[in-house]
Image 1: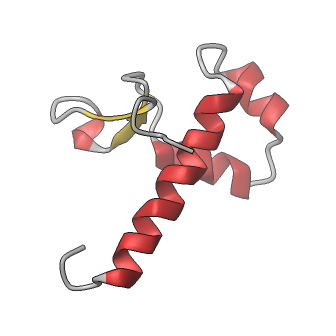
Image 2: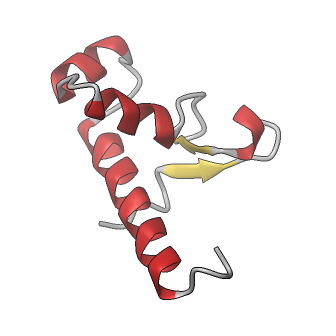
Length: 76
């Protein structure tokens, strides 16, 4: 999945953390909600501006970041 159109990095928004489509919802928050056992439906209900594709983009972003870290841990 190409998450680059859905995950944005803006220096003046949420401290430059990766966010969903310029919204103030960080990738970290979305992943944390999933880990806390919130379902996709619950997350989407709480954040009506988000889509299922946004949720997938968060997971893809985290997987890509982990992959890059494991490839070259010193530059991450």
